[in-house]
Length: 226
Ligand code: ADP
Image 1 (tube, helix red, strand yellow):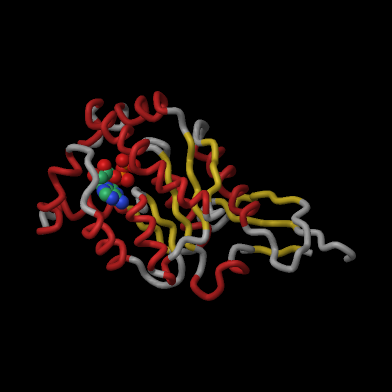
Image 2: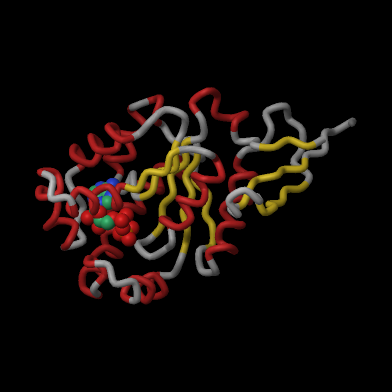
């Protein structure tokens, strides 16, 4: 028996709500966007949103410009408001939020927005730094990039611990090609969403999805007794 889009079983009508985390340079933007396409949900990157506001010189952009350029976190109230304003119904892949315990608590306090899964893409710090300094974004010069890596340890890791304690966190090796990491992300997703009827997940594989060439999740399930 074959079941596709198994994540829908666990999330009800609201759709899957997945947080993608990882050190700056881990590749969460690439993987987050691919995963959102695969799950057919909204992809929201707080970093992209802030950079857009800065580029169009909006009042919000002006308010956060210096902080972003320095690699510092923007105030929680502001970022929570931005996330709330921009999220639409039907599930999400959130990239760059929550980044602190306070932000994670804010997300859990809004029940309809509470994540159903968090994926941390793991890369060693020296690899992340090498990727960042080769990327050329304004906040990627080595001093600012190092500052962002430190903030990840001090502020974001405790937020991930909170997600872990709630049984929501899975880790995926990010030190590989984008395609290989994507396979890891999708496998983690299958493992995290076992069928509710108690049947065993005998095998899971990911096959190319021809329409847009992204990957599509196909879980082959063998039901006990069938
Ligand atoms: P990276 O993960 O490579 O650091 P992002 O694009 O996620 O890059 O974030 C860029 C910058 O935007 C951060 O350094 C920070 O200044 C700001 N930012 C993004 N998300 C948040 C957040 N959730 N809380 C506070 N500041 C944020």
